[in-house]
Image 1 (cartoon, one colour):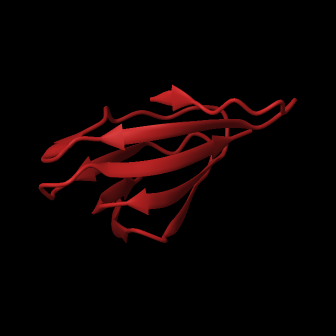
Image 2 (cartoon, one colour):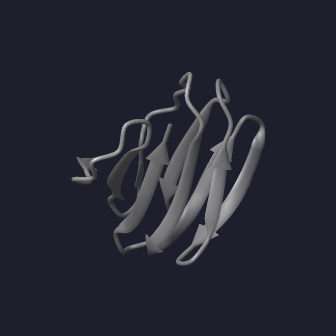
Amino acid sequence: MDRVDLKASVLDPRLLTVFPNSSNELHKHAHETVFFILSGEGEILLGDNIKPIQKGDFVYVPRWVEHQTRNNSNRDLKILAITD
């Protein structure tokens, strides 16, 4: 994950890459997050729900909801993640 150089006082944008056939850790946090899928496809586990994702999709992750991003494809999954 790489931080985006943005002079914001509240927003924390990051570029996330999930490599083919892998996932990030199942986690939760105190802030809200919006994902914009830049390229690739996969799925996001949000609580008990699994949502397919692909380029152009937006995903909202509420505070304290366990989530995990999975890349089930053979291409990098790239995501712009913006938190408060």
